Image (cartoon, rainbow, N blue to C red; front, side, top):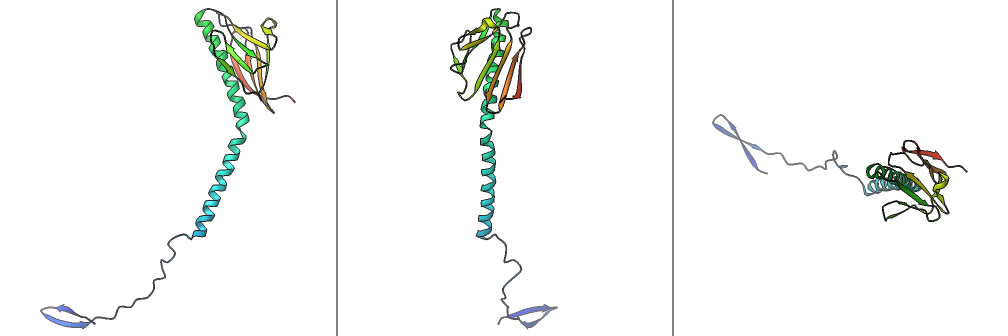
Length: 176
């Protein structure tokens, strides 16, 4: 064993060092997680995300219906705006057999998913075999009408005011 000098005043006194005791420390042995604990936590997290994923995917039909209704409303508002700006009649024509619609003055044909049922109520002179139109006039008025899109039990109703041409979208229950 080593000798450690101890200073006292000007004299040195030698003292013998005590042996170093090596005992296991039991205070901080559990500083981590076991593999089993990590696997259980990861399993719970994955299970939670799968439940959220199932809930999100079940809303796809309702979302698809809402998107289709909003697209039609957008086309109707565009047609009304074009009629007001150009001072010419503009119409939105829905082909009920093909589930498509067009805006006069545009070449593009917009499609509605086949699973969605479309019903149109409009002026008699705007109905032709398999199609119906909503016409907007230069003063902002229209032929008026109602377009209903349905998918399962969900439905959206688009009302077009004949006097003002105002377009409103409402969520409704589909009739059985």
